[in-house]
Image 1 (cartoon, one colour):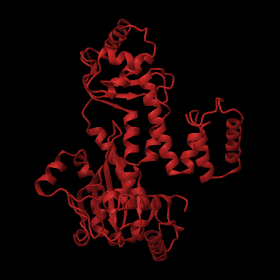
Image 2 (cartoon, rainbow, N blue to C red; image 1 turned 120 degrees about the horizontal axis):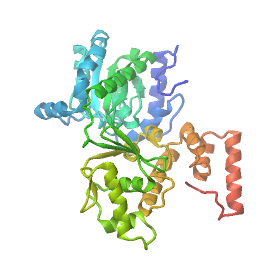
Image 3 (cartoon, helix red, strand yellow; image 1 turned 180 degrees about the horizontal axis):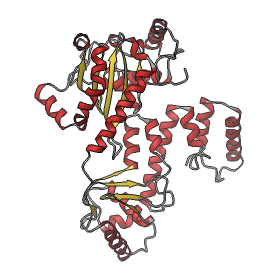
Image 4 (cartoon, rainbow, N blue to C red; image 1 turned 90 degrees about the horizontal axis):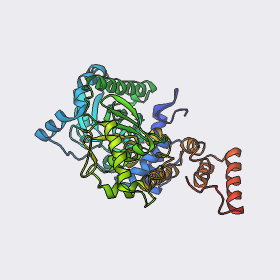
Length: 426
């Protein structure tokens, strides 16, 4: 299999794969071991399903929203604005092919399920209906639930589904994001028979998701001067702030202040900011007030308020995106945003703590995932080149000669001089 996100390689026999995967599924549910040729994305999803205590014998999803509650929730959801596009691009394909078009929110809750009437009737018997929760943590491995869990387009073929009741179905889903903030909004899914395991199905649903994001960008209202602030602070010493459509490059100190105020929307007192920014206790409040006055001139008095010091408009940042994606287990998507440590040159005590915490969260997720490609990217980046634990995880996942040699060098340096500059972690 050249692409782990595709369910079947070209020329594969679907019937044979059903039998092979059924045997692998039975072995996993009985003994917890994964046998070839289970794809890594499926194996990891099965393990998450077990940790969430999903039973392979479940008979159907829980319906969380009905009638008026469902209607109100759907009308307010951002994806309601692109449902006409989904219907135009997928509706005819679903009806003609006896498939279903489904759209879920970021929690795996189905908002719309449309398509061939007979197929909808069959799917309804396992509560694949609007308002039902099809998150991995509720119904195990399935395309819409797994797509929002890993924040990647994915196919799930027949007996790859964790719950046996769902195994007669095959589905392909792709996540949809807010084009401005990058926030995960949900996923668009095609569900039907074995023919959906074709590579074209995954490419198709991914193209539909990208079209929806483009449409949302066109529908987004113009950014006003008092709109949301967008902060980029990972991997750079001077933050980049978008204010009312203007891009501002902040000084290092102003970057630190904006990062800290973004973390504390309730505001910080002058004393709290002083302690958060300066390790040197001799720095006076006058120095801080001068910095804040200069920042207010940059942002505008309507953005930076005082008593307490706070930002008067919402802030989205790349730090928030990474934390959010890690929180839902979307490690690959989180790493794609992680451009490096937060304000790496900053010595502000509160920024240093936040930088270490975020870096530790990312590297811990990478090591736990054990994906050799992600680990390789990490150890070959400036912040990970001396990370012994990450090199050790990479050596376990991909023990090539250069990787093993590098690990031996790091271990040797640490053994010879425990106080050396070679770090066990960034």
